Amino acid sequence: MCRLARLNDSTPKLRINLGDLEATFTMTACRAANLEWIMHSRNLSHHIRPLLDAFLKVSNEDHRGTRLADENHFPPQKPPQNVTLELHIRKLFLDLLKDIPSLAKHSLVSSVPPTVLELEKISISGIIYAREKSLPRDSNIIFRRPGGSSDRVGRIKQIFQSEHVTPGVTFLAVTQHRLVADPIAQGVYRRFGFAGGYLCDHKEDGRQYVIRSTDVISHFARTPLVWEGETLMHALPLNSVCRCCRSPVW
Amino acid sequence: MTRTELPSWMSPAPGNWGTPARGKLTADQWKVIATVHLPITLIRLWGTKEDRYFLLLSNFMDLSAAVQLANQRIITQRHIDDYERLITRYLRGVKVMFKDTPFQPIHHVSLHAGDFLKLFGPTHSVRTPGFERFNEKLGLQNTNMKSGVSPCASQ
Image (cartoon, rainbow over all chains, first blue to last red; front, side):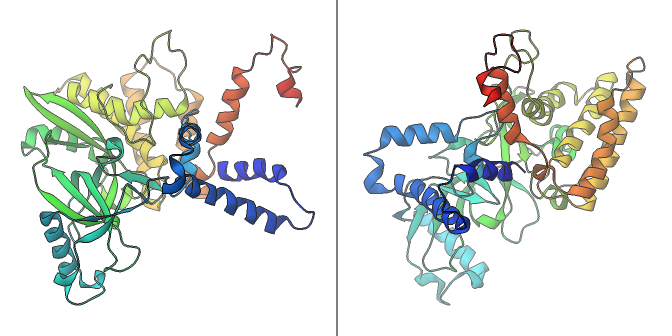
């Protein structure tokens, strides 16, 4: 509804040749869409930095809980860069390709080069996820390992694409927070199902995974808290897309 | 509350909510309080108790989960069934625990939300945050106490 309202607002402002509305509107929309990418291009962005800052400020302006930026499916970001994967990330990446052979373009998975295209952010189901280095708030995720059935809590360290896998598939290197094993402490939160969240160790447990973007379930709200003298972290899933099929209601 | 790290698409509730200085909260701020901040804090404080506090917590969590289900971007029959079960249980709990508090019209409306979900699907297609932005702008206009004659309204 609000998208349509925006459309109604912008339609009368269009300069139209009467009877040529569709073409004019399409052209204007395309120009507007291209403008954003052009503004963020490597050659131009440092020349128009003040304009870019003002544009981002307006886009992220919060009015009664709504932002213009939320209307954009693809977030503005720096151009992707070619980087070489660290050894252990590359090993995890290759393991994933071996587990899911349909992902790799070539049958010889080990020949996939370590150079990948690193992204700053990614949009999954209309929600922006970012690596920890770029935007820590958007890097907290609930995810599942490919083929796994249990929800895990982690943080995105790297987002990348490879030319040597099926086009359109994006991968995320994620570090995990271990769930607290104490059944009493964990049970206090888990008894309320998805609305209660998880109790995790405050620090990442060092285990890393490479997952596909489709393995990401949702963001979570991260709150450090002290439980019986121990510093822990509470993770509350913020899942507005696929809660029913994944989390039981108590 | 201030230590909670939320994704950029979600604004935290103001730290001084509930005080005269803050004044009224928006619907979105109430939603964040009810679905994020209060569950985290109340479960920590009351989750291990066994007296009336735990009943209050369970009752509140029914409401919190119902609100979350009603705001899903994808709605299935199971969502609607769960919502109706939780909101009914919440209202029954309110009736038992707050015997001297009469139900308000909003409580009645909440029982029909399941019907609207069945009829129209997810709420994001029918709710009106776009118009809320205009409401805020209109509310901020200085009308010099002459409602209906301000340039903003006449244009």
